[in-house]
Image (cartoon, rainbow, N blue to C red; front, side, top):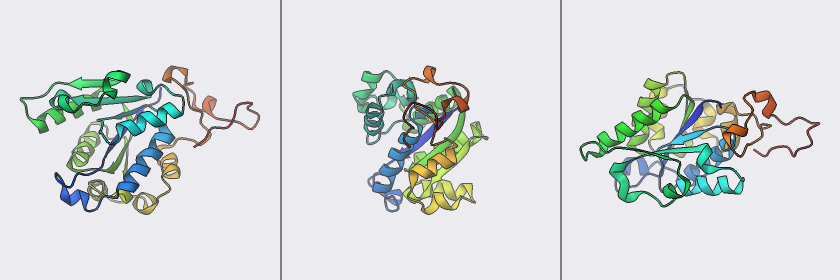
Length: 223
């Protein structure tokens, strides 16, 4: 299987991060996450730390595409938040739990992220909306996976704006384009003609073998 794609995304809560909530565009965040899921699912492994407002969205799209959600999406969560785990965690068995550290929220999150980034090789990291955790994840993955493409979708606002500022020289379309489907196909290098596969083991290793051709009797893939 090809390298994984890391997703760092959340809808800022004004009670915990007013400065991020003030710039966040909830509609854009939802649209960007939905578009990323449509572009990647069945084509690339998606890894992330989970978020209660977004996890159900990923499952619903996966189900509509007829894919094995638990095979294509890997979540990591710290047992520090065990009282907040959604029921879907039990249903799909695709969550790696990391131990809480001294009942400390930030240290527990750091341990989870370090495990998450150590378990996979990443070709890209996508940042959408979010609060301070987005910045922490950017710094960590940038250090542990220096060759991974960093893709801050700055049009979604939130902490992703700071990721873009730290990165510098952000491509113009990441700043103001709302055509997220085209944006992700381009920046992730995923051809529109690439088929989706129900399980990763069904996917040919050779990218050329995954592409629709004019003489193919199968229906061409949708974006």
